[in-house]
Image 1 (cartoon, rainbow, N blue to C red):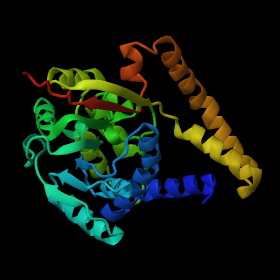
Image 2: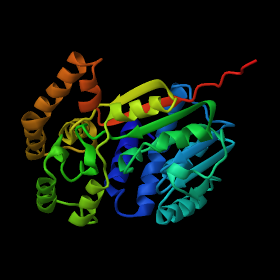
Image 3: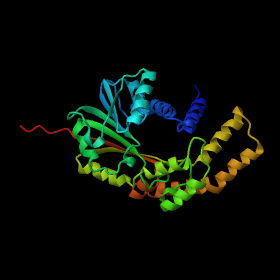
Image 4: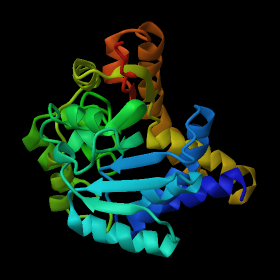
Length: 308
């Protein structure tokens, strides 16, 4: 499959992901399969290792990790309805992941049970994180690695309302204002204002430095931080339209002008803002907290010293 066709397929999956739990699992699976090449590039080889995926949701990402043939993969979530979807999805994909319903603060595993722990999009939904890292530290073997990905509250598109209100930092407005905007924005047919508000209310105001400080306080070593700098949908649409103009489908003059106008009105100043943050505050907490769309923290449990 060509790169353009692959991106088009992922875009279609992304747009339909909220239609049902199964469609969201399929979207997770496809994204996880693409994520594997980045794992291998960074030296993460899961073959023969014991892997834990916490906050697995519909299980798509967990099934994607199985492509690297870990010796065992356990996926945990506290929502049993999502776990039923995950089990059915794993059966369709013919994967042998084990799904467990459990609280991340009281994980039912023995000490030093896993070599690698993944978590994607879970931390921002926890009402508290003080008990998370002792639990992870206990079940991770000495020298094991944990990769935690989450949306920090002070990033431009936190609150999980980007699809409905695709404007940066709008989630930082007073809650009543955000509710009003949700009630008056255009929603996809399968979305309701109540569901969007529920997603928004399920996010807590953790920052990247808070999570990092909490991990270090409980004995983890920070071995890496990664940031995903967002691109406004107007710019993505502009790039997609150029590709279509070059041969896939000709756009009308009105469509081209609409995309260009949107880019000129919003995307260019938006991109300039992130250019300033990237180049003037690259090593400062300002860039780390206010620019990334998502924040990935890579941790290692130190190897225990043997006293003679």
